[in-house]
Length: 260
Ligand code: FPP
Image (tube, rainbow, N blue to C red; front, side, top):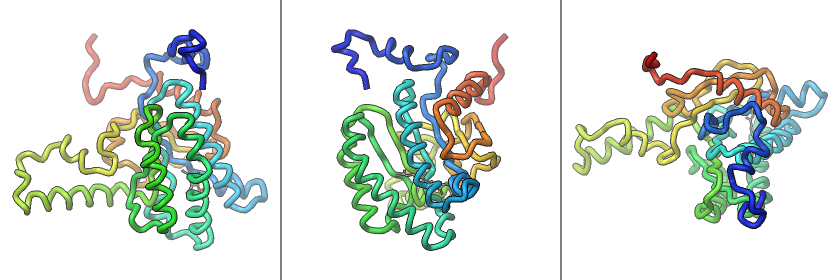
C-alpha cells in the first residue's frame, strides 16, 4: 500500500489512481458481502480435483480483499463455510478446515502489514480446536488495526444466528435485566454475530445460482443483489468492476419514493 504521507499524495488521489475511471468514488458500497460459489465446478471443468478449486478460491478472496482496500471499500464479508456444508464428503470438509487454518497462519503477518482487521462469525465453538485457536489468535492480533474490516462466515447459518440471538434476549428477559418493550431492531442486531458491523450494501454471488443460501438473512434486508455466472476462482478485478458498475446503476430507495 502507498505511504500517502511521505509521497505527498493524498488518500483521495491514491483512490482515484487505482479506481476505474467510470466508477464514482462517492457511490461505492461501504460493505460488500460475497457468496463464493463454484470452486468445485471450476476445478472439475479443468479435470482437476475439487480441492484445487478451493485453493484457487483462496487466491480469489485475497485479490478481492486487496481490491476492496485499494478502492476504498471499508468492509468485506465472505461466506467460507455454512452449517449445511458439514454434509459434504468427509475428506472435503477436512481439507477445508485444514485450508482455513493454514491460510490464517500464513496470512497473519500480511494482514498485520496491510492493517486488516479480521473477524470470524458463525457457530465457532464446534470447529476443530486447532482452527479455533488460530481464529482467536488472528482476531486478537488484528483487532487494533484500523484498515478494512474482513469478516469470514465459518460454520455460519443465518437462521441459527437469529435463533441464538432470540435465545440470548429471552434469557435476559427471564433474568429480569431486559424489558420486552425495549426489544427493537437495534437491540436485536446487537445480539447477532455481526454486532457493530453494519449491513452489507452489495451481496455478490458467483456461479449463477439465484439463492441467498442462509447467508446474513437479517443483514441483507436492503442489500443490492448481484449474481454472476463467473465461477468463484475466476472472479477477478474486472469481474468486481462489473459488479460495482451494476451497483452504481441501481436506484436505492429503501422502500421510499424518490422525491421529484
Ligand atoms: C463453494 O464452492 C465454496 C466453498 C464451500 C468454500 C469457500 C472457501 C474458500 C474460498 C476458502 C476461504 C478461506 C479462508 C481462510 C477464508 P463449491 O465447492 O460449492 O463449488 P460447486 O458449487 O462448484 O461445487
